[in-house]
Length: 114
Length: 113
Image (cartoon, rainbow over all chains, first blue to last red; front, side, top):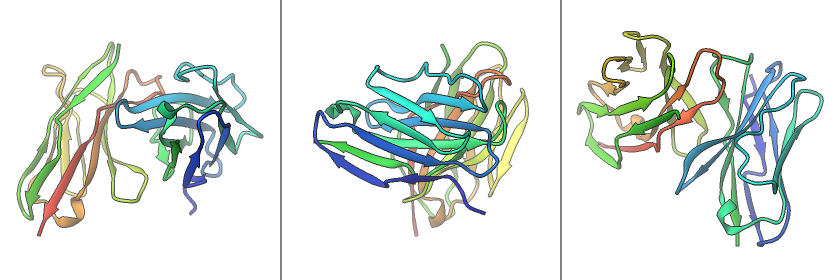
């Protein structure tokens, strides 16, 4: 079956521009996660959605970052006024339930901020 | 806080060599431990996991044993293949009710024919 998909696969933007990254989780998975993979920081948790519960935004690095999940499925991560330090691979994952389940990762979006 | 420390790479091996990647962790409570693998051009995949002390996770010839006394979860494979070339990440979720994964820095492994 289809796995987690993310788009675009690559995004190059200029400093100060806004970007939107999309994640399509595995159908039926109620939990969705965003992580960031960067050279200096490794893999960091950003945000978590579970069903209709309020998302856990504790990993978002600044208020320039936001995410939403519409209809319990597709999620969009938005970065406003991008900075060079935002350059990273942004990974999305989904899992069948809220806890203690294997997280299935998408291929990631590589963001480069010039 | 929760953290994972894993052996720095890169690691280069010949085919059929023995592979060990060390991983130690710091966590409160009773974490679950994972090894994820990222093959070139692909997303992260769960390789194996262990949910309690002394559990051994195994998959594709890889093994790791959850050692609470040494807070370790070292990954081993007795005879590597070229197809095992990848980046390996050790990770933990702090408790069975915790959904966040805390990752190690990753270890790049290259296996030469």
